Amino acid sequence: MMQFIKATPKDLPAIMEIIDDAKALLKANGIDQWQKGYPNEQVLGDDIANDDLYLVQEEDGIVAVLALIFGEDPNYKVIEKGSWLTDFPYSAIHRVAVKKDKLGRGVMGRIFEVSEQMTREKGLKSLRIDTHPDNQSMQRALTKAGYQYCGHVFMGNGDLRFAYEKPLT
Image (tube, rainbow, N blue to C red; front, side, top):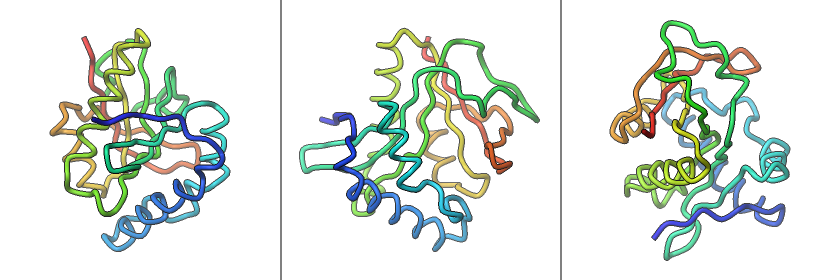
């Protein structure tokens, strides 16, 4: 049984361990996502302060971390080379990382399921997420979970991301 638990400032060392392992894996796979200092303790601390950061817990402990943000994302206001599937109120997943010894065990699929359930409980009807163009493992996970590629979005620093959406009707 997977649970999302609100992260607290005392959780930052464990969160950073998961994030740093994810950064190292991305780098080893030749993906420059998260290679410029982001996300860092400040960003994750802001997520905690905004009540948006969750630890993902299963029977054997913490398996992942993610920001689940209920409401509009300023980076998603403009989409290029496509369009969003809906104009429904939505939530957005950001800064998701799975503990390295849990990779390949279906954790990401279960994270999507719980995120979708929580989004529905908030009365929102869609879930959006973006990923680096080279992050094919995340793209496969999104497609497998029923997310559809919608186009390109750009982060505040100008970085290109592939945008995905899943209507929850």
